[in-house]
Amino acid sequence: ALKIRESIFDESKRDDTLDLANLVDNSIDADRFFEETYVTEGMKLLFDTAFKRFEGKSSNGLIKLTQAMGGGKTHNMVALGVMAQNPHIREIVLGGKYKSFKEAVRVVAYTGRESDLEFGIWGEIARQLGKEDFFKDYYSPLRAPGQTAWENLLESDTPTLILLDELPPYLEYCKTQAYGTGTLLNITETALSNLFNALNKEKLKNVCLIVSDLEATYEQGSQVIKGLFNNLANEINRSSTNIEP
Image 1 (cartoon, rainbow, N blue to C red):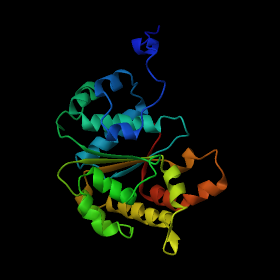
Image 2: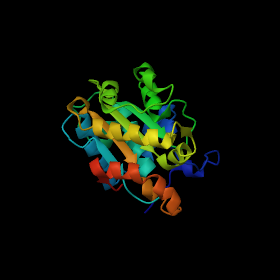
Image 3: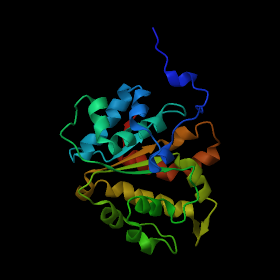
Image 4: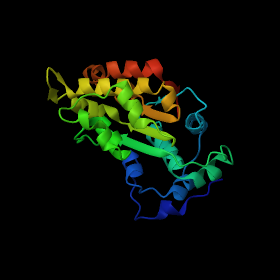
């Protein structure tokens, strides 16, 4: 009943998983990735929701992936990122669906395990877009970009996918960094809240942001850790479409 992949027997293969850092450094073999990926119904729903947004035909610009740890959130993000970066994969995986959509999609991917951001998440997004100077006024001292600043950064004829995964480790670190009378967490919460609101604007109708559920990531953690993320989680819940991969 089963046909085992040859790679299973390759002792040189490390038993680890891909994360968003692999998207950023372009180290993923797109064809092989989908040869070894089973496309679930939840994944199909994620693809459909995102590509409708890239076409400017959906009002859902913010998607929250909800499921407990080990439920496939990161894998779904990577799958969508690989498909966005590689138009030929869409024909193979989607069976001709969205075949009229031949554009490449700009992909920005950040995992909270990369905590050493010099200019915050907003600076990292700007850097990956090749528009670091757009936010130069928000770097020293670190300040949260407003809604209009996000619109100016992201507005483009080229569709854009933003993937934010494993935010709790980074946000927990932000809590320890004092800035003025508050912390880097306060600034980051404001910056992301402004970004989420900007996605509702017509100028960003082809921008799609995927974020993993904050609470699920730390569901086994302490109430203190959960409390750090309440404000941001509430902001996401207010304006997101939920998908369980």
